[in-house]
Amino acid sequence: MAQATTKDWLDGIQKGLLQQLTENKGALPKGFNQDRFILNSITVIRDMLRDSKKKKQLQEIDYTSIPICLAKGAFLGLDFFNGECYAIPYGGEMKFQTDYKGEIKLCKRYSKNEIKDIFAKVVREGDFFEESVDSGVQNVVYKPLPFSNKPLVGAFAIVVFKDGSMLYDTMGKEEIENVRNTYSKAANSQAWVSSTGEMYKKTVLRRLCKLIDLDFDNIEQMRAYEDGGDAEFRNTALPGNTPAALPDNGTPVDVFAQVRDAQAKEPVPAGSIPESNLEDFRKFEEQQYGQPPVGEDFMIPDDIEDELPFR
Image (cartoon, rainbow, N blue to C red):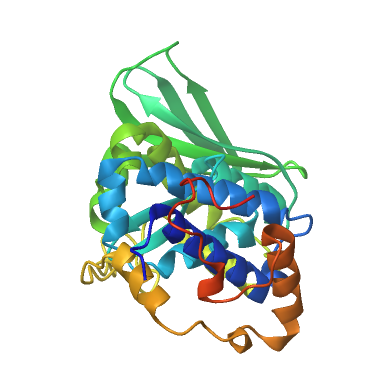
């Protein structure tokens, strides 16, 4: 058996993602474009392989966790390619994380009380920010300095419902940094380092979302949303209480070696896919590849140019 190529590896992820979506098709939102989602997801993973640092991280995680992570974005109708969510390798696995844009999209889609507007803003030194409650009426006044790049001092989030009611939450820099350093899944990730302002906004927005009554269509969507937060808490612990349960570091795994090992084994029987979904899985495979899913016969020869396997 020839050594697995990058194309073989990407093809394995694509087939794993397709199987995840087929087995859990009831969890997908209405109007979900499966073809486009798979194409965009594989493009994102392929782009990660072009970065030497990210490629090394991919080689150290559990290969089978990648399709599972990608499927969580599908359950919520979020797109990795458009930056609505992210696939982040750490702790020996690929972890799913929502973006600030994705959080807003989900709140507008699933809030029981219809939302008119929802947003978060960072507050910098010199900005005017005031919050007050007068006779039970909440009020927030924010006047930022134009085009200011002064140090961050905090962030706030506001949701205004169509019935005229509103909710808001505020977090100072010290509180946000405490959440980052104590509870974040990856406190020194590229998102925190390069997009600190966006992470400040997402942190306060995610906490505000706990006050919004979200009604997901199914349990898979709810679990995916819970997994998408940057911080992991044990028993709903809050800052200052029980330390967060951080992911197990695990033992580094060479994913390319996993592909080679998998190819050396007998093909996985089709019966591993639930019978109710097997026909859908076969039809989709035949549509995309011109032949039904089989084991080693489906492998792409090494002499074919290393292009994106999904068509």
